[in-house]
Image 1: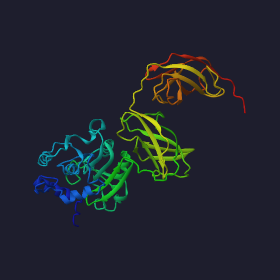
Image 2: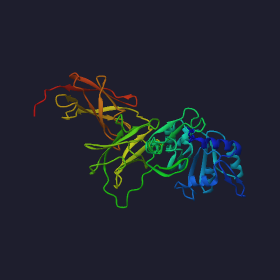
Image 3: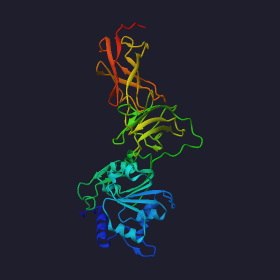
Image 4: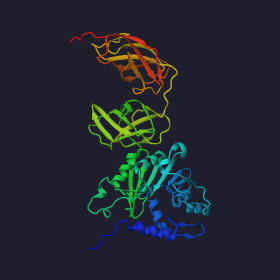
Length: 447
């Protein structure tokens, strides 16, 4: 039986040609000189032509990740963009071509995992061409790419095809192969082989709102990834009623970009059925596809906190199907919790509203009015203690816009002793002086 050809032999051929020719990219210089590389000019032009990148990029900022010899970088500069190129090594051929073209492209030796808007800023267009499958942590890399993209990321990557795994239906399954050593064409820096469904799922999971397959070429797939949703129609339907927005695990309004955090939205909509593709949330204009949508009383949607948000307050909005945007709700991102003082100015039974007492025979809600809460105080960072034991905080009044006490509700357990007990509030490591509440337990009256 004849030995089956290795579907990755073309990579070995590329390596042989690179060793001979020296150049990976081909170039045509202004004087007509043609530099022949492994990737010919028609192929390079065809790859970039798959993406909706205008011919006039004046006023736009472009990042080229894994620039190698730099053809894509210099092409974006030719179109008028302000270009930054990065690679994990200092490629002398990039520098040679940079000089021969009298280029102004910025060139940085940087790993893709180092990308951060705080250090490199944001880019209208990010090129991520032929890099993803070289990375051991492809999803993390796509999150870093997303964080510095303000509009479009052009992702070009090898994808598994039927010819690579005959009969495995890889072209319709969201799967990825891992190459421990040199299984992919004899190269030890080819780590993963995603299927096309896996690649698009990765891009959505990384934080892009819309992911559009532009073309599947002979050896790669071209995927356009957008940070924002398409605009509502000219005559949109009524918007959903956004009722609440909070952290998916601690139910507060504070979020950290250091972690993989998710936003939960509660909203009302007349639609009887909504899918993941129908619900379109955004944070400060950055759309994210939900990972979960369900109706339990009212509608709930969970979605990733968009990568690359700046420190401060951000508006969350949502739209469904062909509706307009909902009213916004605010969340705090990377904001410190600071206050000069914390003081309890009042306390009452949350059921009867009688001051300075709570009757556990009527309910377990204790209402406390606290002065000194910072604007981003929430259910997670405001602590209430009864006789030294922490209570479950169920509500923190939104900032009133003026310096006055805010209401905080806490649950008193049925096991609490009766009598005069001390209540304290704590936020930002500052504790209030204790106040006294009388805990009562009158028998419940039937009916």
